[in-house]
Image (spheres, one colour):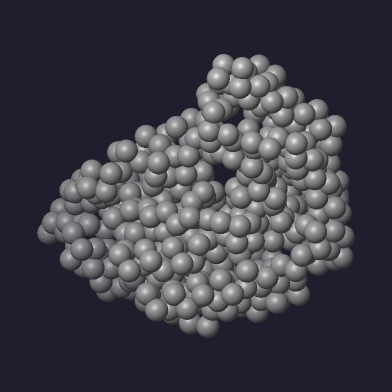
Length: 484
């Protein structure tokens, strides 16, 4: 059992130790009846006092996680492994797992198609891959020990400084590098926050439609998920306020800037209102920002919700993988106060720090004009691809396509006469794939939506594939009219 204590944190050592053991028991890494290290051996391993470990074990015993048997040792108590299981029935978790299972199966077992509109990933030739390869070679030549060195749990210090500078220069956001944790992508950031700050049965509010992988995290951990609608200005703040009268959420997950899947952008007024509501109703906001650099039509991108947060109610999650290099999987979680200590403790139990080489690889992009130049070129290329999709659908009056203001996706509402299963079958026959809208809803999945990601293909394949899909829709609607 590998534990650690961070002597730079303000959190007492015994709390850090007990927290890590508690997380491992909850996750099932430590099983009922499993023996824990003795007080003295753990104290020697962590270089702390005997009394510190004794205090940590006593706290765990009071919580019911362990049993201390005099003369025999310390053992994991019964009934604590994956404690969310007992909440599954009362919160309809088994039903939600069926929905989640459908989504996961689609993502895991989808066939590779020629015209793949299902992946919100940037076409490789639009990314600075060659530049990254050269920089990584330099890193390995100049610092060969990078492959044999563990990174600090909170992430590479150089990178955290550069991300702080980047956020200030490009997003007007002033953050402290020592209140930042590097994660292996935004997905791990979401999981880190959920695992640390929420307990089974807690209420989490999400957008509807929502980023499907975020739904998976919240459902799989046994939380009670409440959906809030999205319109052309993002999350419906009025609906949120109404539901706050009924529910008491611990967390609101929101993707305000070029939301996945709809591409909407929340105005500044609404962002300020969210912070006010969080202060009034005492909940946290997890702001997921992975696309804000990719804006279209020369719009002015609003400041992050975190910019308006003065009392530590907003956790800001900044992803870099989508728009720079998906293979490096880098994101940063910015959080205030004691929440940082808690997240740090959980991250230590997850992976003892993200890989160092990918973190070092991102440094030259952030430090030079390369990031700015890359983003300008990427915006132009993706705006052209978005326009290709909009132009292809413009003559289909029965189909409603929401014009994305940025990001990688177009959200499309199909006519009610279109049977989703038949459309999917016809698309597959033509080597076309897309993300069914049902993967982005939790309660009462909406069948007549699809998400088209225009970022993954070359311009030629995008043009050909989208025209094929439009032809399929036209033929299906024409056949329906003939049958009437």
